[in-house]
Length: 317
Image (cartoon, rainbow, N blue to C red; front, side, top):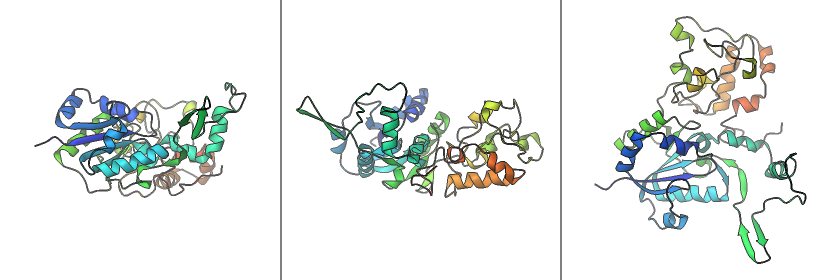
């Protein structure tokens, strides 16, 4: 039998998802022997867009799309990946829900460009030049850049078969996902490939593992105010989103005194991650006055999911 063909594309991401695949280490060798990589751009294989375009539609068995959709090139490649791949996976939280870079949707592209190229103290741009989709250099060379759009998730552009959370996905979970793919042991289409447990369920700080009942949150703290060496971060006042976040990471952040911020994505059956997180936090606060003490609630609850939330549009602060 021929090897399954695999394609990978990095859109508006940081390449952390790529590194999570490289971190498979010895197992990556087994994966590379089991599949035929026909496209892995732009980080691994020097295959041009036109080479991928020339492949027959539906000829690629598995496609991984990482990063969010931030410009017209990303949108084109999302549609091309969907056209060529039998199975298309939103790989990582950026592709799945928009990711932390999706917070740019709080502002207009013009505001962002003005900030980046004009209004920072270290910027030397006396002429106030901003990037444009097209420009003429030396009076004869026409250069083009992809046009910026708002940040979108992969499934806001094309149909997605499966989702994998994480920023980036933990390599142990990536290994399990590859095994499920290669052995054909996948959940129903549209599902997240996940172990199905919340961060709290795999977190050693959970009071359940200490055989005591959970306590209400009596105060709200920021991480700059310190963190407990042991015990539940939520109970100590650090707003951890572990109760509503997939724990495919193995609760790595709480293990090092960092509250979960939700990069693992929503638990199965959740329609809107941020709404679920707000509801959960609200129910465990000792009194409603504590709600007003939550610093930057949009940046907390929508940190990784703004483009994929019910809001979707620009929020006026």
